[in-house]
Amino acid sequence: MQSPNNPWAPTDVRQDAWIFPRVLLAACAGIAALAGCRQTEQPAPTKDPVSNTSAQRSARAGLTQTSAPFASSADPRDGAPTANAIHAKPSEPKPTTVPAPDPRPPTKNVAERYSHTIPDDVRQLPVVDQQAAILRALHEQGDWSPEALAHVAQVFEGSPWLSFGNPKTSQPSMTREQCRVRRRGADLPLPDPTCGAPNMVPLFDPRRGQTAADARVCIDQYEFPNLPCEYPVVWVRASEADALCDALGKRLCDAHEWEGACAGALSDFEREYPWASMPRSVKNSPRREQRLWLEYEHNRTREVRWAYGLQSDTSVCAMAAEKDARCDVVDWGTCGSNTYPAGAFPRCVSPLGAYDQHGNAAEHMNLPLHPEEMTSRGGKGWTEMKGSWFIFARQPSHPDDCRWRAKSWHTTRVTDSQSHRNYHLGFRCCKDRK
Image (cartoon, rainbow, N blue to C red):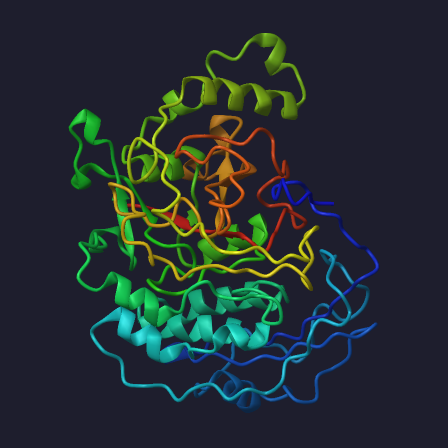
């Protein structure tokens, strides 16, 4: 179970609480028409009579569908359950049919586009409708192929939790309109189009005279779905975060990349992972002992700073929300994701242009215990949680400076299908620069 004083402790898993999502979302050829979805909860899976045609599923998403290459008449999950629930109760609300808003003509401003696409009451909608709204926003952004959106839809289909939070328990700490008002007139760092994807900024080391032109990697400015003044997606496993980044032609960030984005200087990986100085006795130890040693050595010599300066100031970032009084253990039914819209605190931005690396949602990233486990080298390592969360000003449970690493929290492989998820845990992606 999870202690209220330690929100990072492993969750207690109930093996007897199964939820069978019937989320059927697909991306279509041409304009990336996205299919709608339906979720059911039953002791055994059954066919969904409501979403048995492409036209009906398209109506759910509010988009026209011409073909559905990723849709299937048979659900591969029919049969014995293969997923487990994190205190997910059988009474999790069934979605009702909520009409999606009519698509509006695109504008030149991405912020205008997505604010029209995602309804203002999105956090009150069932999870499947939240997922459909996110897909529509990505579609309206206009930068993603039908195949990419189809892969995003497939990840959503596999999780009845991946959302802005449980609509029954979550209370947004600020509206999106309030976020937009706060950002008006602020000196906001602009995304760099040379990153090859929207709302990304390059990572480099100005201490060594580098500029953005020298960068070989970029990072999302905001937590996924990487849209200003949108809420971060939470209840996401590390494996799902990794898959979503991959679907969009990105990857989960290595630890030193996330830290460099926050601190304003991307160090060489040799400096941030003391592999070369690891004693032989540690090298011959189990992986957990290797990880503890690497984290200890890194923390002992790390630069201590925050995205906004050299001193901690919890008033600068999204940290002043309330925690649900019933949330003593991680439970879908009692733990609200009381997050803020991304980028709502204009001063909570790093020198390189990344927002909310303190507060709001904590974030998954990849911790390599060996060079071949770096995602920047095509590998996969171990789960690592970075940043802090939306009640951190009230419960500062650990250091949250940019380069601090937690000691062996959530020690699964990134690709583990049972990797950690939580009501205050999201992610962002990195992308190698061509």
